Image 1 (cartoon, helix red, strand yellow):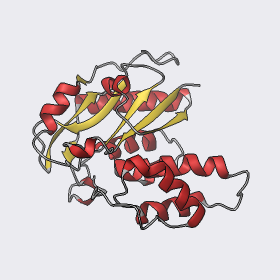
Image 2 (image 1 turned 135 degrees about the vertical axis):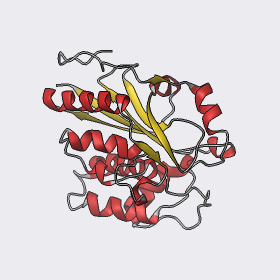
Image 3 (image 1 turned 90 degrees about the vertical axis):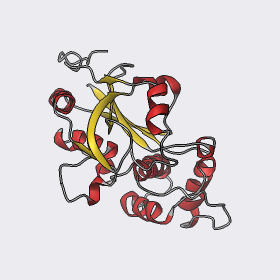
Length: 237
């Protein structure tokens, strides 16, 4: 079966020393080039035209902190490919707080990824989380809960993950694995941990369809540095 993988980038201990931002993006199969993310088309502002960029460089650079892979049917995969092609030709408007925008068609990166999964009817609770920060929390907690199911069958991952994401704000990501384990065991975030101040904002496929027809705009670390140098802790994607 074909597969897609969602990746999430969040601030790390090192990047907190410089400008940083959150980002979610998606990979088709194991391709190093069919990797797509949604972002503002120009200098960061609250809202502006968006664009689909090729985020393949992020995989090479290890520029992510969490990932989740989904096996999909050929039909689901084709739908995702088709929707990426459509977004490349006719990108939605970018809005850093799209979930609160008066225009329901405004999007940011994690909403773009969620739209692809929803449209293809990929069954996952990941789509309930609309920011890279909350998607990161969901993926990490899901990994932890899945590993604990055999010994703790009464865990309710949806309720507990929601509670964790609500309670967990600003813990340095260098400590996040310890925080997650502590939270799962005690039900609370260790109050002694310092807070960082980070806010919750935010090759071809193997099924015969071939690669995405229109390549997304090439992006690289230099583009990223130029684009996001204007705003410290830029909250969007």
